[in-house]
Amino acid sequence: MITDDMLHTVLRRRAAGERVHDIRKDLIIPTGKRKGGNPSPASIYRALAGYEKSQAYPESAEAARAEFAELRLATG
Image (cartoon, one colour):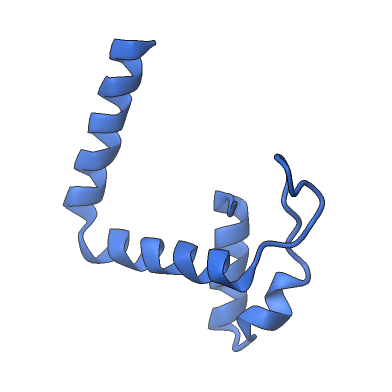
């Protein structure tokens, strides 16, 4: 699991020229089954891909967030 803070760290450090493999060692999973461990490179790359997609299509990302919020309220 990649948190928003972790994603921000990855984006900032990649912009500075660091490799994902090197950044990954400094990221700590805060909750869940793998709490205290490092995220896999695949998880980091998936988070980066999701971020890039949301930046390319911000209106669809915002619509998805709004739809998700409505569903949570309806089932809540």
